[in-house]
Each structure stands twice: as C-alpha cells, then as structure tokens.
Length: 252
Image (cartoon, rainbow, N blue to C red):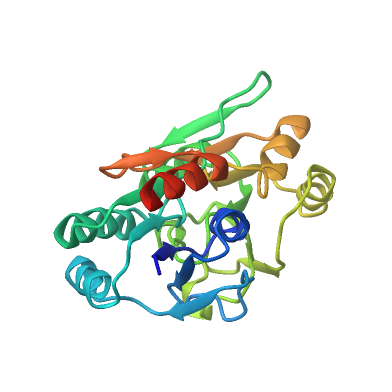
C-alpha cells in the first residue's frame, strides 16, 4: 500500500488530508506535527508528533517507513522545516511537494510597511513611534516576540491560542487568548476595542487570518508586513486541488 507523509500543523494541511483521503481512500496517510500546540485540530488519519532530527533524521524516516511521497504543508514561515523536507526527500529518493498558500496582495486602501524579518519590523515600529506612543497588535505567533522587547514607546497586544511563557512577552503586553479563524467583523471589533494604532503581521496568505488585514484597511490602520523567506527548492503548488492532483500522479 502506498504511504503518504504530510508535514502539517496548518488548516491547509488538514484540508489537504481530508481531500486526499476522499480521492484516495486506500492511501495510508501519516500527518506529522511539530507538537507546539497542545490541542490541535486534527483530520481523520494517523498522526505522529515531534521532530525527526533534521533533514538526516527525516530522510531515514522516509526510508525505514517506506514512504511513497512527501507533502510539506507547514506554515509559510516554517522555512527550516521546508528546507529539511526538500533535502530529505532528495536523499531518500522520495517525491516531494510543497503546498504553500499564496501570499496576500496589497489592495487599494492598504498602508503596508514591508519588513524583511521581525528585527526589521521592530526597527520600523521604533521609527514610527518616535513622535508619539503606539498601541501595536502583534499578530506574528508566540515564537517571534523577542524582537520587540526594547520598543519603550510601544504598548503591545498579543493574541495567541496558548499562552507563551511570561518571560517571552514584551514588557506590560496585554495577552489575549483566542483561537481563529477571525472574520472581518470580529477583527474590526478587536482592533477598535484595544485602540490599536498599528498591526504587525506575517504575510500568511489564505482566508483564516485575512480578517485583520481587511479590518485594518477599513479602519485606516497601518500594517507592518513581515515578508516570507524565499520559496523552498522543489515543486510548489498553492491549492489543495493541485496537491491532490500531484498525489494522483505519484500513485500511477
């Protein structure tokens, strides 16, 4: 029986697993999660949790477990995992696909400040807050907060599914625990209630977190947009349909 390994942890990965199960009910699917979220949403398939030990460990897993194909459907900012997937698949002679949702595009009314990484985003905030204090909504995930610790003229609102360690939060940050997706109406209320002056976001793409971008446009709130790293090497698609078609081609 063919075996498909999916590197997941995203809604896109869950949607892909559901679609490929429907298209190929006899295919054995293993969904791999990093294990950072304690209560993740999971599709109906075998699930493994934890790392592989880098590219070398993943290559060994692909070989010993007889994996027929690998689909990397991790977060667009999980650059290290995607690079390991490409390297491991090449070493194990296993076909590999990267399923990465397309980026958001700037629309009329958007006021975006582009930042290459979180350090650059913090520099932009430092400059923008030089004349007056700013309330900043940090919507970047709980792993990337350290870059914003020394911005003394900024007050931060951080939203997370699970609480980060207290020492990881910027000083006096307001922590809001909530799980998305959040629609535009929800985000309009959230930004208004927290008197947010500026939003910092990753360009995650997709619809699940786009509500904050649409709400910022409506409220004329600037956005500091942290750009993605370069695409991983190998074949890349942006939709579940294309990924399911790729799997079908591998099974012929």
